[in-house]
Image 1 (tube, rainbow, N blue to C red):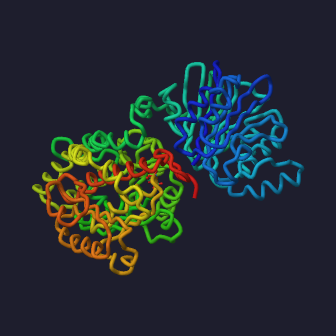
Image 2 (cartoon, rainbow, N blue to C red; image 1 turned 120 degrees about the vertical axis):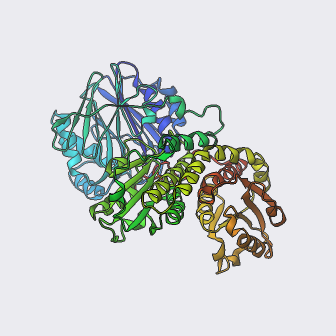
Image 3 (cartoon, rainbow, N blue to C red; image 1 turned 180 degrees about the vertical axis):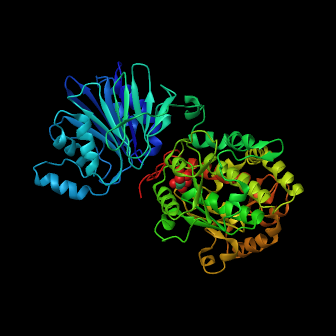
Amino acid sequence: MCGIVGFTGQVQAAPILLEGLRRLEYRGYDSAGVAVQHGGAIEMVKASGTVERLAEKTAGGASLPGECGIAHTRWATHGAPTDTNAHPHLSGDGRFAVVHNGIIENYAALRAELLSEGYAFASETDTEVVAHLLEHYYDGNLKRAVMRTAARLEGSYVLGVLCADEPGRLFCVKEAGPLILGLGVGENYFASDVTALVGRTKNVIYLEDGEMAELTPENISVYDRTGREISKSVSHVVWDIEAAEKGGYEHFMMKEIMEQPRAVKSTIEPRLRNGRIELEGFELTAEEFSRFSRIVITACGSAYHAGMVGKYVIESLCRVPVETDLASELRYRDPIVGPDTLLIVVSQSGETADTIAALRECKARGAYVLAIVNVVGSTIARLADSVLYTHAGPEIAVATTKGYTTQLAALYLFAVWAAEKLGRIDDARYNELIAELDALPARVQRAIDLNLHVQYLAERWHEQRAMFFIGRNIDYAAALEGSLKLKEISYIHSEAYAAGELKHGTIALIDEKRLVVALCCQTALFDKMVSNIQEVKARGAKVLGLAPEGDRRIFAEADDVLFAPRGEPLFAAVSEMVPLQLFAYYVARENGCDIDKPRNLAKSVTVE
Ligand code: AGP
């Protein structure tokens, strides 16, 4: 979960590399560094802290001459976030510099081997072994040295390599992590994410695991694992750099909350044609689909919470058993899946290591894999048998908002499509659900408009030391996501609980110091939720109720109220999440937290 970027061209590299790092900083931001070729040597500057600190140390890159370089922004795995441990890492003779995203799992053995051969290490990182291996294998042929080095590595390694003796040439290697090439005019690039490239080019090449590329200002060559040159298709990025800018908002997170009506619309609308759902990208026929005896949904974090909502909706409409499983658990559970299993993999980035591993494990056992992802060409998208892309656009804030709500929209589309194909709903219900899907973008906008007072509620509650989110049925799955949003950006401890479960122990924690957020949007269970609200109030808790618009009963029960627009209860999680996102945002803002880049986190967890 680091970001790497490389540039080779005919203008100064460092400022361009720094700009690339700024757009990758959401992938890791505890230290950063840049290395460029200049005068037959490598010049390098590194800094703990954010990319801006690196920019300060290099006058925005101006103090580093040279037209070819690599750069890195880090989320520490091995070694504290210090200048020394920051990437790039140099070989002992200073001729090689390397940046790395991933974890080299056999680095200890390699380090011992290199130490025994007299190489000295400056850092605590796994990455530094790559720099010394390059020196060890280099005999004047850089491509061969890179291949020999990569052949020694185990684990995940996306590498950028710079050699002082090879002016204008860069190499990069992709193994178990994202790496994209950018094609410019008289200049070429590589980066961990398209967002780092789209300011200079929209023509990109997505590399596959085991591939490596050689870049000069005029040419890009791609090689397979054996070193044979292969041809790759060039993709064209359809969105502009403005989509990856803040657009006048104080934080990316607020911008992305406000983008949700459009993002949900972009995900749903292209799949509603002439009053029917058409899932382009889902390659199965209805007859093939009906052969599945069970569905397993796997993901991590917020994507897992979306999957939990999907379970309720798919089971309710399709009457097919659906299991949800944390990817980090599923991958090691010796899963009981086979050709009768449809595995739905949910991921915004498409690069989450645990989710990729769970996908591989289940696919190897014969499961059919449908991926719901946001990043085009991501690893999960390319490993799946079918892909339903969410069209949220680039999501920069570490705390996902539009990524989550568009995952729900895609799951709803799938559930209604499948229920109709399986004959589990009649035409009237099918048409009713399609109308509800079509209305979702407006519902999300209404949820924004209904909760302009959230900022003031946050001023009242931001000093809470602990909060509970409770709900039933789909509201329980939504409560999990609301709780995660709060804790990951405000650092306030928060737990989500099935409301009916609270009394089985955890209610012992409820007292006058606790705020309980009660999600009451499943109207059939409203009375049950009122009972739960009364239980916690009887023990001194304050209650922030979330209820359907216009349901005034909540005022008699809760101390403060949030509202979600009315609509199909099965689809309530999309719009009810908006006030919870806003609440988390304003609480974190009141507490002065770094909302877009919370401590200890990264946008895409590409390591175990
Ligand atoms: C959500 O706010 C977090 N950033 C995190 O839980 C995230 O949802 C999780 O890491 C999964 O990421 P993915 O959707 O890119 O696979």
